Amino acid sequence: MHVGILGGGQLARMMAEAGGPLGLRFSFLDPAADACAGELGSLHVGPWDDAEAGRALAACDRITCDFENVPAAVLAELAGKTTVRPPPAAFAAGQDRLREKELLQRLDIPVAPVAAVSSRPELLAAVEQIGLPAVLKTRRLGYDGKGQEVLTSNEDLEPAWQRLGDRELILEGWIDFDHEFALTAVRAADGEIRFYPLSRTVHRNGVLRLAAVMVDPPAVLQQAAKAALTRLLEALDYVGCLTLEMFATAAGLIANEFAPRPHNSAHWTIEGAVTSQFENHLRAVCDLPLGSTRPRGVSLMFNWLGALPDRSAWLRVPGLAWHDYHKQPRPGRKVGHATVVGEHIEGLHQSLERIRPLLDADTMRLLADSGLEAGA
Image (tube, rainbow, N blue to C red; front, side):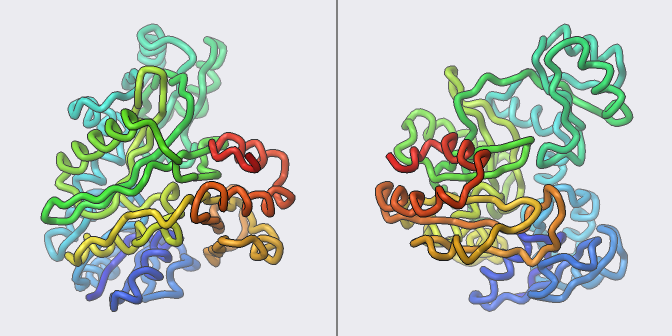
């Protein structure tokens, strides 16, 4: 079976790595000539609506994406020629933060207070309605902390408007949370859903830095997250992997956003689960039986930004797997990750003791926020 992927970044690369053993072939469309997935299939370089590339992808048996901001109109056009999964409607809903929040609200999934903002008067009215602190965000093309400004006082409003005010925006109320977490599930075309364990996530400047399998999460939180994600998957008639990012608060879970594709917070599943999110995404897209989402132990993933650390020291750590995305170093760019898996929490702590000398002070603080209590 031939799978076309819109986007040729690390997610497409890891899909292709997972799909090769299944006998799948891959073609990619990406605006960048050095897209790192291109080593593993046929790469078409051009804009998302490139006519020639569109014809090539339309010849594929299945189409999927590694980037949530591929224009939904392009996916809808391809859906008239071949099978596109997840459905274009899922991307349309996730590409506009206001539509995304409205969908979650309709499904009785709690979200932060939100208001649309398209002018200075509307910004002032939204602040009056929601209060401060709050976060001003672009409605479209914002990810990994891009297109966001935190507002803590009225003095922040004008500078934020100067930076973002040329686009349609939303204002979201600030959430006082204990920690952030994510839930990934895979849904097949026949409606079967399988869940991975909850992941506790740690961010800096809006970018995921660590993800850890949650050890014995509160049952009420786990049940609420699964119920919310089930409603979302069914409402979208979704096929493939989807991740819902959430905040754990004293009042319960608050949904932040969802990603209609494999997600950074579940990269640990490559080594840490019986079937990775990438393989299960392809199984669903290609109408193959879903694989087990059972964890193999307790996992912790480090996300590498800008440049890779010295791998020679890391590879001495028991239970560690190294992933180089074959991307040129650039400040803030995701260039790889490492996952350490312990059969149990004590085994993971032993590996973390080997890792601690390799970490800088900021990463040590991130590790402390992961909830794994390294060295305990």
